[in-house]
Image 1 (cartoon, one colour):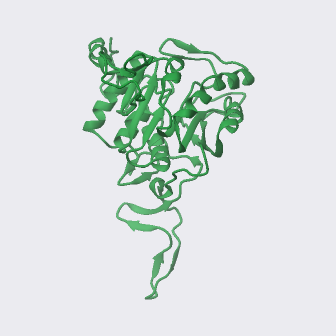
Image 2 (cartoon, rainbow, N blue to C red):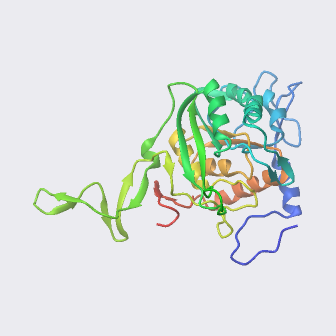
Image 3 (tube, rainbow, N blue to C red):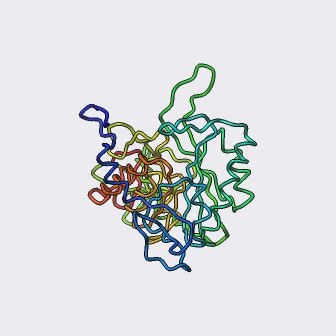
Length: 328
C-alpha cells in the first residue's frame, strides 16, 4: 500500500496494482535447454546457439543464479553498487557487516564471474565507503587495471560526537585493458567564478581569462577531477527519489556513463536497486541491463523508465554541461 505523504513529497512509490501490472515486464535468465534467453512470461524464439539478449532489460533474479547464464563479451560499461561492509536492510533483506577479509572473500564470489561479460575495451566502476574501500582495492587489483579512486561528497549524514561526520563515498575506476573509452569533454563542470581574472585583449580592453560573462553571472568550465562535490543525494522533494536506502543520484551515473561509454553502448548494473543506472543510461542514449533480486525495486525501476520517456532530463545536467549542485 502506498504511504500517505505530504503534497510536496515527490518520492516515487508503488501500489499493489502497479506491481502486478509491471511484474510481467521483468525478465530472468534460464538454463539453456532448448531455447536459452531472457524469459518473460512465455517462451522466446531464441536459437540454442545464441546468447541471451541483455538489451534494455531488467532481470528479476538473484545475482548468483544469473551469473553463469550471462552472455560473454557484450558489456561496454559495468557499474557496480554492492552492499557496503555494514549491516543494512534492503526492503527486509539484511546484509550484515563482516571482517575486511570476509568482505573481500564475498566480493570474490561474484566479481570474477562478471568479468567474462565485458568487452576488452570495457570500463568498470565500483562503489564503496571507507569501510569497504580497502577490500575493494585489493580485490579489483587482482582482476583489472586500477585507474583512479573518485571520492564524492554525500551531504547527508548524521553528526558524531566522537568522530568526523561521515559524508563521503568512493568509486573505483578500473578498465579491462589499456584500450578504453574516456570522454573528458563530456563531463566538464560549470562553476561560478569567485575571483575573475582578466588579460589585455587585442584592442587593449580587459578580457576574461578562461571564463565567460553571462547574464546569470561569471562561469568557468572546468575539467572533471576525482573529487566530486557537485552532487545532491536524492531526497523527498526530488522526482527521482525512492525509498531505496542507498540510491545514487542520476547525475552521478550520468558522469560515469558519459565519460566511459558512447551512444549505443551496453551498460550493466548487477545490483540495480531502484534503477538509477538503467534510467540514466536510457536518458543518455545507451542500452542498459540490470539485475535485482527484490521485486519492488525492479518494478520501481520499470516505473522510472516509463517516466524517463516523458522527462528525459537529468537534474544538474543541462545542454551538455554539469552545473554545480542542481541550480543553474
